[in-house]
Length: 103
Image (cartoon, rainbow, N blue to C red; front, side, top):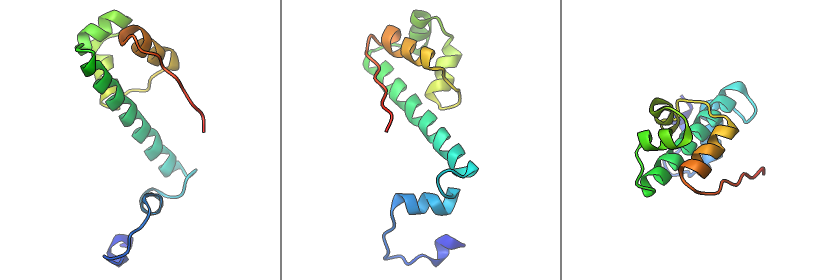
């Protein structure tokens, strides 16, 4: 295995580790990993902001016209989310402003 051949004293970049485990950027396996990672991060951000607002999943769902189970799936990184729904959750549900950036 590649990991067994690594020197214990050699520090590698995170990208190198990801390249070895999931393939280079742009490959199907790496793209799938990155998409799942972003879904997880988005879910964690929403969960954290909802908790800061002292709101339950049920309260957020009612406020935004969604279902509690859908909020739960998003927060656990198990649901695709449309941009319009993300805006509704952040702006209506949390009374916050959502800004997107492309880098």
